[in-house]
Amino acid sequence: MAPGKVSKICCIGAGYVGGPTCAVIALKCPHITVTIVDVNQSRIDAWNDKDFKLPIYEPGLEDVVRGCRGRNLFFSTDVDKGIQEADLIFVSVNTPTKKSGVGAGFAADLNYVELATRRIAAVANSSKIVVEKSTVPCRTAESMRTILESNSKPNCRFDILSNPEFLAEGTAIGDLFKPDRVLIGSLQTPEGKAACDALTEVYANWVSKDRILTVGLWSSELSKLAANAMLAQRISSVNALSAICEATGANIDEVAHAVGFDSRVGPKFLKASVGFGGSCFQKDILNLVYLSESLHLPEVAAYWRQVVEMNEYQKRRFSKTVVDTLFNTITGKHIAVLGFAFKADTGDTRESASITLIRDFLNERANIKIYDPQVPHEQIWFDLAEACPNLPLESIKKSVTICPSALDACNQADALVIATEWKEFKEIDWEAVYTNMNKPAFVFDGRLILDVEKLKKIGFKVTVIGRGNVM
Ligand SMILES: NC(=O)c1ccc[n+]([C@@H]2O[C@H](COP(=O)([O-])OP(=O)(O)OC[C@H]3O[C@@H](n4cnc5c(N)ncnc54)[C@H](O)[C@@H]3O)[C@@H](O)[C@H]2O)c1
Image 1 (tube, protein in one colour):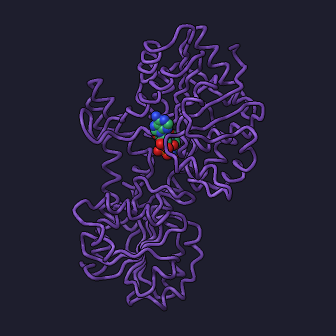
Image 2: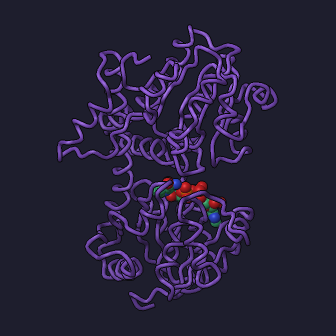
Image 3: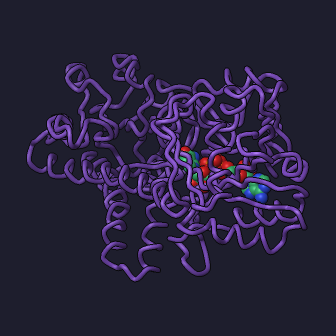
């Protein structure tokens, strides 16, 4: 295959990254056939749903899929056929934190990457460019190359690229349409550079070339971990400051605003909250911690580990504030938790702060009413069962109700907790909520989205992260 002539792409993994990323490639490159494959039949069925009830909620995604599905975008469970027909293959499978064995709790579980790589080696009957899209530890590309080269057929050549994905859930389509940068890592050999040129040409269909950065393979792999570590570190830094604000009477929004005005710091990603969640930040930092330890850099490992510990502290601190404020007991009380997704504009719940809060409230034997505009009910039950392994689901269901609206969740509640920054929570009919709540009616804003003065005027007792006593 001549460089620059990618005409068939296969993406292994139809998840939060593979699905949106390759759907956007298909939309922007009508001359390229894109097939997204996955072993999960129900996920593929949902991608192919005739009414476009897609397996993930992401603003703008449906329009993208409507624009090209059946034209040059296909979803299939036929992984082997997808591999065989493609000249470029994205590996976009999950890389969760290992749960057991060496590195448990820190290292990335590379089993899915390895299985996908072995499948490529086993079924490919022509040369391929294989692109690591999953977030992986440094030098994973080398293992992939060894597997591919040791198992390939004669006349099959594999060039490996690293092309980590920087999209953020909730804004994925905008991020993919107009990325801050596209990063491509390759071996610095003539073949590696030719493969890099071929992938560059794909992105160049809609991304200007000065935003396509080409670097060495290992730098590319490490850059993804580094970017997530530094983003999460900003949140943990501002959350650490929020604790000082609460103790001193300073206001974290004002502090963050003042700090962010420094052009060296910048204003983005300085919002205090109940803690970061999502499938990536914690996993990728723990991965960096593990990497640092493996490289005998214990001080570096300790530095990054503290970012995750601060996040855990912030969540614990928030649940404790709720208990303390409700006269040191929430046993038998009703708490409305608004938001279950880890952030607004996604239905993804992985590592959501909401799960930790509800687990803590259940441990205090409170009754909880949950409302989230996007998360499916079965996902909520699955997450709570996983978070509370000592409680049978039946007894969780006795204490937890999933409600159809914020108003329903707040009915007869003693306290209301904002756990996700959904826009609709800013527009709630607060007078109606107040009327229906038990008094005193407590509100805990874990996302700094509410109009505190307005709520206080109505009669609520309001507690906000990063502010001294505002009741
Ligand atoms: N979610 C994000 O915001 C985000 C952002 C950037 C990078 N990433 C990284 O991208 C990767 C994928 O993340 P995700 O959120 O899309 O995960 P996901 O769990 O949503 O999707 C992964 C998919 O891969 C499929 N899969 C696993 N092994 C397979 C195999 N051998 N053959 C075919 N399909 C297989 C699974 O069935 C699943 O549907 C991870 O490494 C993650 O760290 C995620």
